[in-house]
Image (cartoon, rainbow, N blue to C red; front, side, top):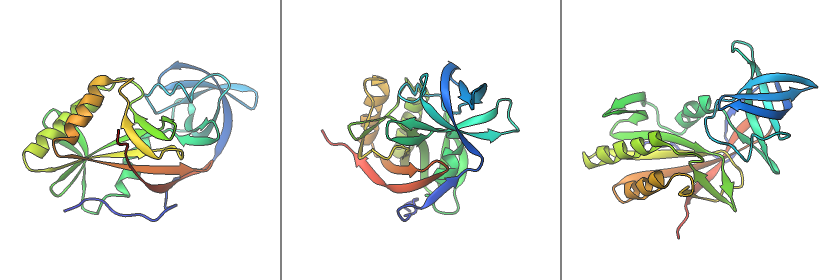
Length: 226
C-alpha cells in the first residue's frame, strides 16, 4: 500500500516562537556558529552537519531562536540565501516527514546494518534533506555521505526481498524546481542513487517554503531528466 499522504499547498508543517535575526561571524566547527546578536557575540548551535558554504559565512544573516535547555541557549533556525531563507535544523526533519506518511508507521526501524527512518506496512522510508539549489536544481549531498550511500544500498536489498523502498527528500529552498544527485560533491552517492533508481527504489521530492517563523509545504518536484 502506498505510504504517503497528499497535503494542500501552504500546509504548515512547523512554526517557531522567539526568533531573532543575527549575523554570522564564523563557524568554529560543524555544530557551532559564532554570531552577532544586537552587538553581542554569542555561540549558536547549528543542527545541520552539511558544509552550507552558501549559507554560513561571515556577514550572512541567520534567524535564531532561544533554546534555553541547550548549552548555547540559541539554535540556528533559518539561513538567508540570497532573496529567501532556508530551514536548517535537521532535528525536525523526521517530524515534518511524518506529516506526509499515513498513520500506523513505525519510526527508527533497524534493518541490516542500518536504521531507517520509517516503516509503513510493507514500505521502508528513509528521509533526506537539501537546501542547496543552483539554477532551479536542488542537489544532495553538499558533502560526502557514506551514511547516505549505505542507506541506498540497504533500500536496494529490501526492494530485492519484495519490500517497497522509498527515499523521501525534503527540499527546503523555494527556488527548487527539480532534483539531481550532487556528483560534484559525492560521486559514489550519485552513482549509487542511479543504481537504486534502476533497482526499484523510489524517490519522492517535496519542496517547502518559509517565512521568518514557519515552514510550509509548497509542492512535489521531480528528478531532472538529462
